Each structure stands twice: as C-alpha cells, then as structure tokens.
Image (cartoon, rainbow over all chains, first blue to last red):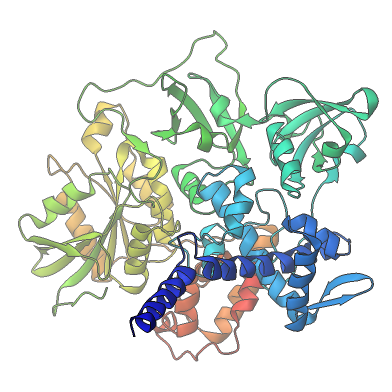
Length: 367
Length: 254
C-alpha cells in the first residue's frame, strides 16, 4: 500500500520538476520554449536568405542556428508539415502562408533589436540574442505599438531594413567596402550580423552604422581605415572578409555630412549651427530635442561641460539645456568660427535665485 | 476628462512650458478657490480653481507643463486631449518672457487647434532685470491672438489677463488659427489627405492638422478619427468614415 503512495508521490515530483521552468529538470518546459524560438529563427533565416538572393539549405540553417544538420532538418521538417516551408532538391523555401508569418517575425525581431540598442542602450552584439530570447519591453504591447514607440524606424541597429506591416521591404542600402573604389571617404550604413563571431570582430573594430571613415588600399588585399567620426581612434587594417561584410555609402568631400560633427565635440564657448540628426535618433527623444529648439539652422552654443566631459550645458533659443554625450553625439552640427578678436561671449548670470534656468532634457514632461 | 460645467461658468485651460510661472498665474487668479485631484485614469495631478470677472464665473483648469503637444508623453497627451476634445472656452498659454522664442513652439501648436487662445507673457519683472523688452502690439499682430504681459509676483497685468480671457471666452474676440502648409512631397500628401478628410467629415476644424497627425501615425488621433470622436467636433452632420481606411494614412507615410 505504501508502495503505491510512494510511487504516486515520486511520479508527481518528477512531473513537477519536468514542467517547472527553473531547476535542472525543467527540461520539457524549457525545451518546448527553445524549440519555438528555433522555429521562429528558422522562418526568419529562410526569408533573410530570399531577400539576399541566396537559397536556404539545411547546412545554412544549421550554421545560422548553431545546431547540427540533424536538428536543422527536423526543425525544417516540422515547419514543412505545418505548411510554412517547402523543402526540395534545391533547398528550403517559404510557402505563401510561411512568408506572411516570417515577415511578421522579422519585423518584430528587428524592431526589438532596435529597442534594445537605442532604447535600452545594449551593445550591438547583444541585441540579436536578447531579441531572439523573446524579451519584450514591458510597456510596449503589440508590434505596432512598439513600432510607434520607436518612431517608425526603417532599419535595425545593423542597418538591415525593417519590413513594413504589409511585407514590403525597403531595399538594403550600401555597397561592400571591398567593392568600393579607394581611396575615399565613406559612411557605414549596414553590417553583416551573421555569424555572431563576424559581428563581434566588426564591432571590435568599431565599424558600426553611422561611423564615417577614410579608406585606403593596404597591402595584401587589406584596407587601411581611419575613422573620421565615431569608431575607434587611430588607424586600423581591415581584412577582406570584414571588408566584404561592411556596407558603406560614399560621402562626397565637400558635402555638409563630411564637415558636420556631433554636438558633443563642440567645446565650451564655441557656437555651432545645427544640420540635423543621426538616423539612430528617432521617436520620443528626437521629438523632444526638436521641441527644445534643436532644429535645422538653429544656433547652439556649448556653455560648459561637467568635469569628465559629460554631461554638457548648451544654450539654445535662450534657454540652457543639459545633454549627455550620448544624446549630443546624435545632433549633427557645423562649428562656427570664434569671434574675430578671439573673445568668447558668455551670458550674464543673474545673482537672484531665479538666475539661468537649466532644464534637463525634457524630464519635466517626458518618460 | 470632461469637466462638469456648472451653468454659466466659462471653462478656461491654462497651458504652458514647465518653469514659466504658470502655477503663480494660477494661484494669482484663483486665490484660495482651488483644489487638486488627478486626471481621470492617470497619476498626474490636476489643479482646478475659480475666479470671477464682470459677474461671470471662470472655471480654471491647470494643464501639465509641456514643451509641445506632439511628443506623446503622458503630460502632452493630457494637455492636448483637453484642448482638443475638452473644448475649453478659452486656452491661456503662459510663456516666460525671458525665453520667449522657445516658449512660442507651444503657442504656435495651440494656435493650430484652437481659435480661443490668449497668450500670457509672464516673468516680465525678470525680463526687465535682464534688459529684455517685449513689444506687445507687434507680438499680438504677428500671432493673431491677444497678448498680455504679466508679472505674477507683483500682480501686474492680471486684470488685463482676466479681461482678455473674458473677451475670448464670450466670443467677442477670437484668435487667428495657424495652418502648417508643408512643402514639396509633404505638402502634396497633406493636400491629398485633407481633401479625403473633408469628404467624410465636412466642416471639421483644423483639418490639415488632423491630416498631419494621421500621416505621422498618431494613434490617438487615428482612433478618434475612426471612432467618430473627431466628427463630434465638426459640429455638422458627418458620416462615419467607413470609406476612409487607415491604410491610406499609412501609405501617405511611405
């Protein structure tokens, strides 16, 4: 009799452990979730291949997901049986139904990456993993709400285009650095985000979207680069693999883009004219800066910087605004020459309690 | 969000950037006849009070301080919804005379959605200390709305402010509504949308502003449009916009 009770208790305990999320035995539960993520990643991979003009195969899938071909084949097979994929001698393709689902997933994935990079401030090498894990920002519900919150961005942090809700995909920008005529000045608009190891190498060299650099032919097929804006200081050598994974657009020597710097590089006492914003700045922070007066053609002066250089106070439209370097770097400006006689004008500060009002960046009304 | 309007009392909204002395104006006008609560469904405090002028009662509602109506934060949503849907008889925009240019951003935005605006240029005592002088008449002419210079601490201009509010609320004096035209592609897209809006909601005030918000993908305005809430402002018979799809608005965006 006791034996039955014992066995029942043992079975109950095992079942509980197997279905618990945490704990060493939460296998069933966790593996169910993981396989869902793999199914999603598979759909995304096949669609991405299509967009890039490549054919997805069991091998490419295995490489992308870091699993063995057996598992890859099984995963693809499951999706095929659900009518989302078609597998034949040529490779893996999407059915119409599969395409719709895949587009939605890519949309959500890239929007999440964007959120993690610019909203949560994560490193670009981490955003893919976090978006993959299915972490979702607490205050954004649907994909549409997330898109609105982010200000309807067009690209993810790697520069990959974000498809519209109807599946329309803007053409990917940029030409591989290895294909560009050298020497020249370029701006990075897109980087290869797979495989992970390649992205890490690219990030380690500081070659991220938005960085502007001078490129010259080096020895043995390498390319010498020197960042002009952003990136890691000093010259570096880029091997052919990295050069073919970094996509750039040329920056004409005399264009305003070539001459513009970030507001964070303006020294106290210097004035500058606002040229615009970086693409990375969208949604609420962008709107907030516009409202405070950081509009094209506007005149801004750096009044002082904190001891470590960050944050700094800027005079705009008569008011003093504090910005961190991270925010100021996304405001593109052209510095003005100092006054002819070398003097620097500073605003008088009233001794009374109501002196100069320093507003923090929209903290009064913002999130 | 709807204020119960006691018979005969005018509803007046008090808007403005943070740090403009808006609270001082509010206190100066209402004295002790005020109380605080919350905006419905939000945690943002809401101050309301009363004042009388020329035998009329004025119910004053203090909106959260905002730099604009468009950023989409909670405070901006409350302020904009109240001015647009709450339909106050007058909206007073309090500005800081020492940083007038930046403050005008909000003034101009409010002039896009209301013709019952009074511009209050406050902190004139400080402006004088800083050597700033303001030409009230020119400002009034350029803005197309009554302008009152005030200094809350000394009480300067408060009677003129009450008079301007009275004139505006009673309809004796209206402000000139501003319309953002836009140029090039944007202007053309706005033209198209405006026409479509007019066909389903004839007589809707600030049509072009609504068109611009739809183009931006502003969800609150889009929902208000589709639900017919906006139509309620048109004041004329307007049919539900079944023929108008939000896809059209999104296409315009692309």
